[in-house]
Length: 195
Image (cartoon, rainbow, N blue to C red; front, side):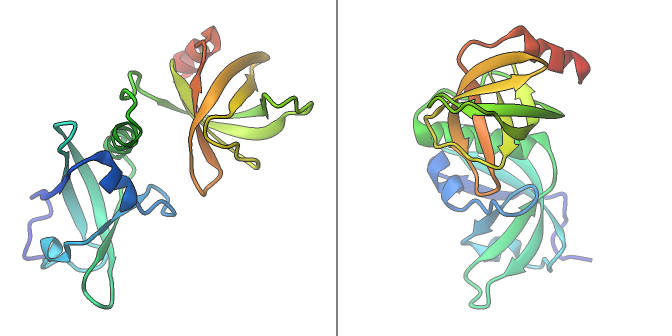
């Protein structure tokens, strides 16, 4: 048994969302963080669960995130935690991104889906590229595909026979894109009704 109770949250304070994104460990299944204060995880071994209480000071918001200690660096200066699957870590990352980009935070909750789509950039490409919608909200979606369009690119997503026009707001090395719909369409409500 650990000397630290797994239910006792570890306090992490970041001045802005940029510092969270700078320490984000994105190649894990649900993401994670690199912590530069490993002493906060004293008494925990690799694989142990940990509750994080992450504060973004510029937003005056706190997020409760569940994670596990994955490893410590050999020099003892860093520790690596992997997020558990949950809505709270996604909301924290969305808030951090919005804060770092100077844009308003997401207004709509996203709902998981797993639907095939085709998407094209507005550069006149004739054939759509196959992809998968991973989640959707009235304001946008998260899409994974073979071709990652650059941030700021206009994109058209075709699903259920309807075209949704949007703009790429973020991308990941895992071929994912966050797309903000330019004019939210009724097709989004169809997805939401199915969840």
